[in-house]
Amino acid sequence: MRISLASDSLDGVAPVLISELEGRGHTVIAHGAVSGGRADWAWCCARAARDVVEGVADQAVVCCWTGTGASIAANKVPGVRAALCVDAATAAGARKWNDANVLALSLRLTSVPLLGEILDAWFDGSPSTDDEDMANIAYLSEMEN
Ligand SMILES: O=C(CO)[C@H](O)[C@H](O)COP(=O)(O)O
Image (cartoon, rainbow, N blue to C red):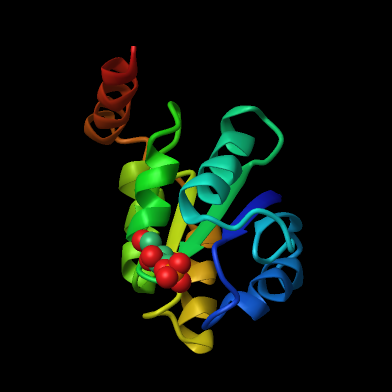
């Protein structure tokens, strides 16, 4: 999968993000501090999210110290459903029930082992085909139009 990755700093797990993603077979498109480029969280996380809706990436991972700014910035991009995930169960639910296409992470809360659990759950997950779940996602799209 093509994963657009953004982080506003090299704190916490940021230095291992590229290797954790590439180690799972993904191609990484890096933005922000992990690329040595412009690293203000609003800009680089929105940039990574735009890659998804523009078809440059299949999904994105966006990170900042809290994870909140990263998720807020990504969710400003129409078509993006970014989910701030603090554990594997949240990541699995975000993929299943929210059809989330952007994973937001807190560099403060996410240890390297926890990152592995979150990434495994995220990439193992797939959206629910239950009518009620799909209707919720359709409603989000309607709100954008
Ligand atoms: O969590 C964040 C935004 O939600 C940022 O990572 C945090 O604000 C960065 O602060 P600084 O630029 O002072 O390192």
